[in-house]
Length: 323
Image (cartoon, helix red, strand yellow):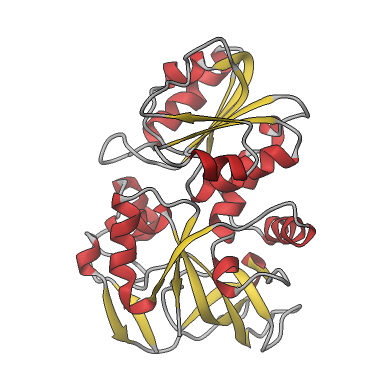
């Protein structure tokens, strides 16, 4: 089968389209014939091996799994001996490690039947980012109707879902994005939109009950100033910071500080779960959640897609299509 393979950590220049053996599913896995795969910052972290602490899981000197890709959509080609609830031919979406390939194995507990009205490209754009947004706005961060929610990085993969979910929950949503993104973020359900090149989140008297920070660059004191005295901050992702810990250092400081202040400061490490996929599927099928796809790239042009992710500001998700 054809796959995008990377033998060493580094830039998109190291990505190669190769013929490799088709994977064989374990007892608790399904083999998915991939039709489309989502591309987000998590793939960049896999590709570069940053932050360095992540290599304890990804592989110390080189990627443990050389095939890139983290989520996808397609048809079940085979099921493991202990798998129930799926059979060959089922259209599924979810967490499929190594999804930039014609076939990938996935834990049965991390995939679900594809939403009925979504294309494979749309379904592939939903799992990782959608589950991250859903988990970010859960527990104490789940906004009550009328509360104010600030989503930083509102036009990106996670942000576009966080804006929609907060609006579904009845919150007054403010989205932060770059120049030219206001109409897109407003269409997702944001009542207010801030252009980060012109306005700061602490400008004016407005303070927020919940802040979801997907951008990873603002210092913790700045985020806290924008938060109400009893508000909740959720830091998503590991951007910025040191080479070893990356943005995790900021998240760690937030967690350590949280018991000492009145605000609830969280660092989110999202987990792929079928129950969250089913929640997203239900919201999509009810029309409460849309799946914004910025653009698609064929499998052979994956390196170009990664470069666009690095340099641009995609509105929604980028998607790799597999013929």
